[in-house]
Length: 240
Image (cartoon, rainbow, N blue to C red; front, side, top):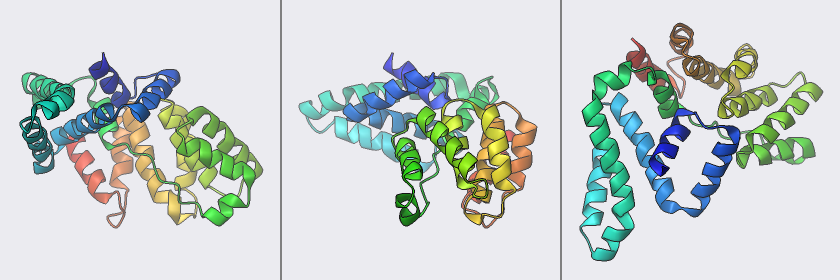
């Protein structure tokens, strides 16, 4: 059941309540954290043809399991997950994986990472509502954070980051359609801190919705100087 939960979490198939419960479990289970990271690397490894970084992780688990009886016991569950995932991917094959109905969900899960909080601390501390919104965001309380950023957006129509961070909350709540207009408005803004990142997340939102044409269109518009350029090009190759 834990393997299934990891898969559903990474594919974005959990309800908001399930996601909160799963993330609470992560706080008390280091092996689950490691298994989650490994499974995400497996997804990324497929798109990178099982690169050397992923192979090294498997080797590290193998080496660790051979050190002592106690180490074997501690790593048994993690190795079982790794072996199960590897066998499953071998049987299914890369071709099937990349052409299955879940391909876009898997690619989304592999590439999606939350954007960091880059709003200046002095600015956050000067507004209690803004500070509360980011506390919710950092604690992954997505529904509360989305509501708080909505309030900030209404009160400050001339700034763009409340809409951007609200969109990220909505993506985490599996509501990509609701995130689209917020991301599009941020892309069109003159705030360089968020306009290009918003383009990347806009592409991912379309990918999550299985709209590959729109996803490709936005990926192609990401500047080559952007921090997302390499990922954008890699993702484009997977969508060709």
